[in-house]
Length: 228
Image 1 (cartoon, rainbow, N blue to C red):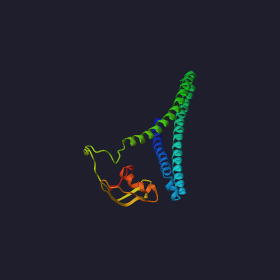
Image 2: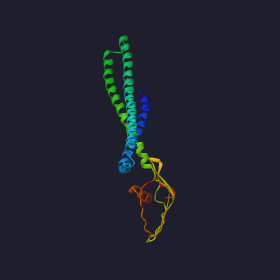
Image 3: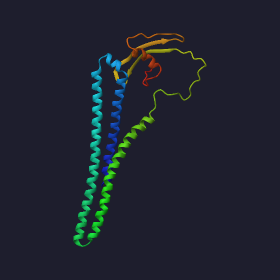
């Protein structure tokens, strides 16, 4: 009667704990991305837009944390109510037996002492169970991150390169989007071919734009299009 509500509500706490961790990660990632590109943000006068995006991310994280706290408080309230309700029911039955002469007052007092210890332990157990479910939600997310496999990884049987590598670099109609801004391409149908020994220079208004092909070539970003 007491264990079933703890298990059911505990699963809800675990799910909300995981969602809360995800929202906090989104907030940190957005702040890191904006601060690292603060010159670009200021160049396009997008301070208000980025501030609004960060405010929405913080509000979503706060709302998720509130829901998790409410469910956890409900878990504690349900557990305490069921435990003390059960003790009250048994106490009423014991009082009737004392009146009927089938139980002594000393036995009833003994039961009350034991019930006090059990109720205190049950209240602590509900708090501990809430902490366990919260940690389990975060652990699930960590397990998923540890088991994630990158898109770019070393082949099972790599080919041995010669002592002196002479290769060329080629971009063939490459279109690249940052994950946070899929509607704005960083590279749009970009084509380039650099032969061995050739020296080229990129000319542009902003250094970040000139560095994008180099970042794509060096696989600084995992989500690289097929033509890169």
